[in-house]
Image (cartoon, rainbow, N blue to C red; front, side):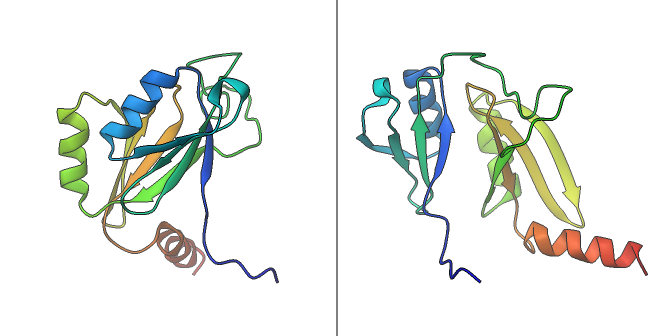
Length: 146
């Protein structure tokens, strides 16, 4: 087994530098470094929680689309990032007040989740308080297999 400690960062390809920075800043991220965005290197965005997104660009094809989520053909790859939030209700209110569209929602075994998209339609799942989604799915599968 490989000894892992935690996720260091998540890389997200973007097409519009300014729109994406503004979106992630609205969520509380701070731009701490531009590693050379125009040459394909990351804009390093860090949230006070310690979550680190590297915004890579610029995207040169299919801007504003997410081929992993929006296409009928299902390509392999990472489809979304799920982030635990302190309050589902406060999160939904914040998202709504700031004009961010909720593109999906789920109440799974009492844990409320909403889905939003950044300017390039990359999906963020905002998971409310409760057990980890992995535990909820495991319990659901065990109950249905009993």
